[in-house]
Every structure is written in C-alpha cells, then in structure tokens.
Image 1 (cartoon, rainbow, N blue to C red):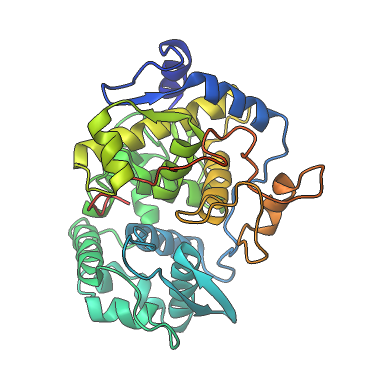
Image 2 (image 1 turned 90 degrees about the vertical axis):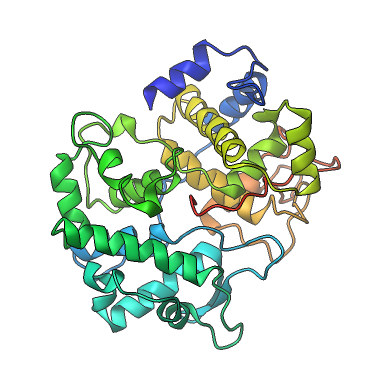
Length: 354
C-alpha cells in the first residue's frame, strides 16, 4: 500500500477529491499526523492471545471469525452484547470471546468441513446470551458466508488457513498467487476495499504466526466506526450534496458510494501512517477503531467529557487525559465536529463486505 500513501501525499491538493464525491482533506490530515507523531501510540493487539491453541487453530479461528465480523451494532437494532468469560462485552469483543469459548469446548468448530454445513441455528447457539438472548443480526446471511468459505476450502483440499499462506509464499500482494488474490475468492472476503482481508492478515501478523515477505503491502481495515470518526474529524469530506444529505438523513447509499467513502478513509489512514512516521497502518487502525467506537459514538460522543462508563481500553486512556485534569476524546482539539451539530454518522448501506 505504499502506492496509496504516495498518491495521497503527492497528488492531492488539501481538498481535492479522490473521486467526484469524496475528498481527503490534507490540511486536517497533516494536523492529525503531527498529533500522532508526538504521542506514544499503543501497539496493535487483541486482548486475547488464544493461549493453548496451535498455530493452525489460530489461523482457522481468525479466518472464521473475521468472515462474520460485520454489523455488530446495526442501525435500528439492538447491539450484540452479553457475558463471556465473566465479563460483560459488546460487539467484536463479545463475538471474539463467545467463539473462543465455543472453540475451547468443541474444536470441530474450526473445521472447514463443519463450516460447509453450518446453519443459522448453529451460529445462534454459539452467540446466544442468557440475559440478552439472540442479538446476532442476519444469522442466515452469516451462515451462508461461512458455508461458502467451507465449501471452497474443501474443494481445494485446504484444511487450514496455513495452506493458503503456504500457497501464497507469504506474499500479501506481490507475485502470483498472493494472499489478497487467494482470499478474495471467498465470498466473505470479496470486498474491493479489503476490510476483512487486511484485518485477518493483521491479526495473523500481530499474533506472530505469519510473517509477510512484502509486509509494506498490508493496508488498514476500514469499518463503519472509522468512517464515522474520520468524517467527523474532517480528514475525509463528502463533496457531493446528494450523498452528504443521505448521510445526514440516514438514507441508504449505493454499494459504489460505500466503496468510495471507505476507500477515501483508507487512503487517509495510509497517508497518516506514512506522514506520522508510524508506518504501521494496523497500529493506527486499532487506535482509531477503539477511540471511535468508545468515545465518538453515534448519539453521545465524548467530545469534552468521558462518562464513567466509557469503554475506551486502558492502554488508550493516557491519550484521553488532558492537562486540566479532564478526560475526553483524544482528537477533540483537532476534530472539526467537536462541540458542533449536526454530527455526521457513518453511511447506511446494506452489505456483508464488513
């Protein structure tokens, strides 16, 4: 993804659109990059190391989990939440912990043969919570994605994600075949902005299981939390009046508009990674994702004051502490939306890309 960083850095004026409707604002990007350069950003990692699982089991765990990791907080529906491991969790954290618990009880869940025949009812059993019930949205659609994943692996005689890695020669995007090409063959991983591919590959790298010969080609996964946050900060702008109105009104956007918006956010993040000197898109993804889902919420953003229930992980809290003793969104001094209304939400799109 070096190309994306150079393109954003050298060919865009401060508000020049990367396509007719969406723009990267380099003035805001430069300010945010300076902020990033001056802070100690925590390393990218998950809270669970999947201790006790083999390298092949870890690969299959993440290949399965990422395939279904979209829309845990769908608009107009109750968020995915419940108890796992003695903790109350939401969204991705709950999804991760419930699957981990299920896998430790029955390792057959990591078999492509099982994926090929998994049902919506099977998924609902795995992610059911005694207090909140069945909160997993579109169980049928998610099961269909997993069925495709399992069937295609069985057809290729692949029993583990490691065999995909071996077939690629450890290449993310260079040479033939490479991991992007191979993973894109699965319906769950076909997103042109490669959210799930980049997330899966980053997870495998961060756990130390996989090493890539062209690691500089690994981009950043972009989800709806990051779209919302970057639109509010102003690193990405919507120039098309009709599209801007759709976001304000919560109207559904087209698949093309979704791709354009997320691609612009991806290019902005790649530029920030390069310009800040971090040169680690995954590290910045984890920062933005955790801050935006914890502090830059849809309805009650913590622009100038975090409530006691703020879910920002402990390792990011130092970034949210200010000299006057207050704790609030780390980006409030840069954000163009802080203290202003209306605040944009992420776009509304029906998709299983992410």
